[in-house]
Length: 162
Image (cartoon, rainbow, N blue to C red; front, side):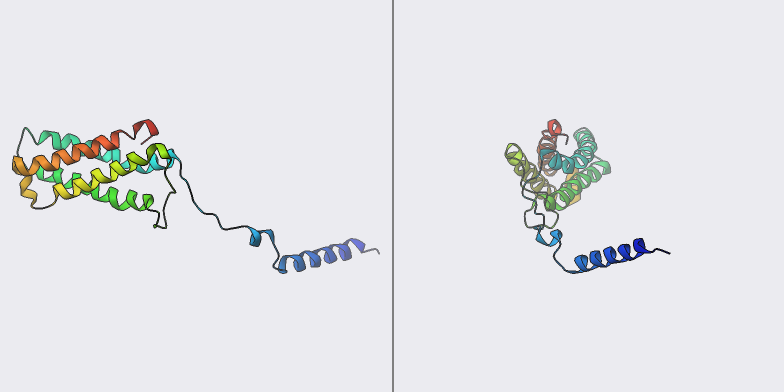
């Protein structure tokens, strides 16, 4: 009764175990991956959900120039909330110090990234305060204009898929 196959197999398995346990695998030699650049599409994919949300907010804010109502207060708060969420969620992906940083934006969209963030910050600033100001034209107009600028910046992402 010959059993050379079993002996050869166990010898080969022992050799593999020893190599596997030696600690000199090629995985140890590879550097850890780092993100240095992101694509335009990656940035646009972060923008897209906010663009959709902002469109519905913009329509509600437009109605406020013709009617003063509680809906205007709600629209102002929703618009501000969209901008704050953008700064929190998208802003963290655009921040090099963040653990969820996408990577450096391509040169062609660097100004658009900055413009979109600045517009969102302006919405936050212009729309904060007493929500009943939304029923007063002067208080509402600053918020509405800031949100229009934010919406305009978001719209400029459309060619990139945002």
